[in-house]
Amino acid sequence: MMIYLKKYSFLVFLNLFIVIFILSFFLISNLDLIIIQSNYEKISSILRTSTGDQDYWPTDNWLTTKPEKQGMNSKKLSEIYKYIEEEQVNIHSVIVVRNGYIVEEGYLSYYEVRDVKEDYSEEMHILYSVTKSITSLCIGVALKKGYIDNLSQTFFEFLPELWNPTYDQRKKNITIHHLLTMTSGIEWDESSNPYGSPGNDFTNMFYSTDWVQYYLDKPMEYDPGENFEYSGGSSMLLSALIQKVTNKTTSEFADENIFTPLGILENHWRWDYAPQGITEGASGLHMTPKDMAKIGLLCLNNCTWEGEEIVSWEYIVAATIDQQSPLSDSTYGYQFWIQWWFPYDAYAAIGYMGQCIVMFPEINMVIVFTANEMNYNYYLDYIIENFIITAIGVDSGITGYPIAIIWFIIIIGSLGTIYLVNKKRMSAKIHKKR
Image 1 (cartoon, one colour):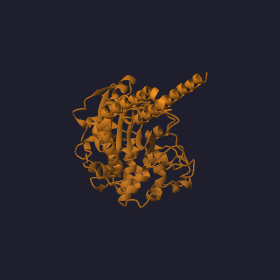
Image 2 (image 1 turned 180 degrees about the vertical axis):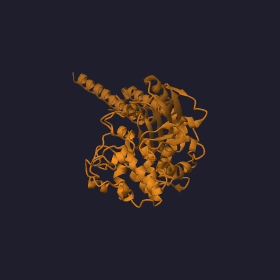
Image 3 (image 1 turned 90 degrees about the vertical axis):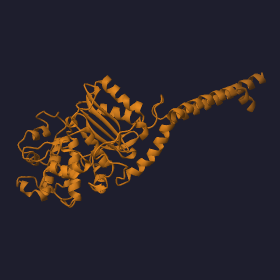
Image 4 (image 1 turned 60 degrees about the vertical axis):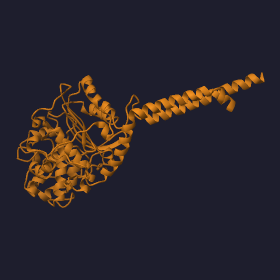
């Protein structure tokens, strides 16, 4: 065997040369990135279980840094804008935060990157259903401060004056938990017909004179807790509840307990009101992208900011894990969607037309989008998976998982060498016998 290995050693050396060349190219071009990535993966795992022990907080100003310093590839991130232009995706802003630092920030008009507006307050964007997640955080604050005792308390326990004797008695059993998880059992259809059409319950509520009453007057379809049905009406009841127990509107309560501690300035946000003077709990918040990123960073740090616990750790954990199984195929917590982008788990505040705050606890990353894009689900998923997730690690002509590719080449090369050597050996034996 050694004779034949020696005879065909050029094949072995050829395979080794190819492998060494690939490894050298990979290591030399990405050595800094590998070291940085390894170090920050350790840091991320600590932050994921900490109470917010960051080295700085962006209360006054965000710090920006090169993606490579946070274990990401700047070239890959820059390809986001090429894709947006080529596909004509109506995205207005992109922000990527890793380990508390902004590593990518872009603002667009007509599919092209532009400068940030001189008056940053002009960058405010309607968040649509991202609003629901902020309403949920307000419930968490109210719970922490003792305005409510627990999530098993019923809605009518706090607002008995809204009870109508003609109502289905099951409505008395609707709890705060049911409203947070959208399992109230009240009949509601917000998905069969597009927003703006008469068959859409959210649209009908929006044009009614009393949003809370509109939702409460709907018939019961299920027992509370029996079925998940995405419902802006549930979020509206949560806002009404906050106003009742705190004697402040949800927007005032959020400003005092969340926005101000995070350094979100008054001229950088606006929250609309329903006809009865109740803050729109489902869809009325306007905010700048950078301040949206602050909300994401707050959540990633277990809702602790500069050493102050804004919302209890127990609440944010429950809010950002699936509360629906086995009721529904939907993965939904307390007004947060539970997501997954290979290979990482995430949770997100997601709004109509592409407003997003996406949190990745495992890799300590926040992604923010604002947009006006009907097909936002497809495009944002594509951008996250193909440009942001793949930017974590290495991209030097070998995309995806380069170590796996290198091992594949090594194995195939080795097997090929063994096959050729054995083939020559068998041929030599046959020739010798003849």
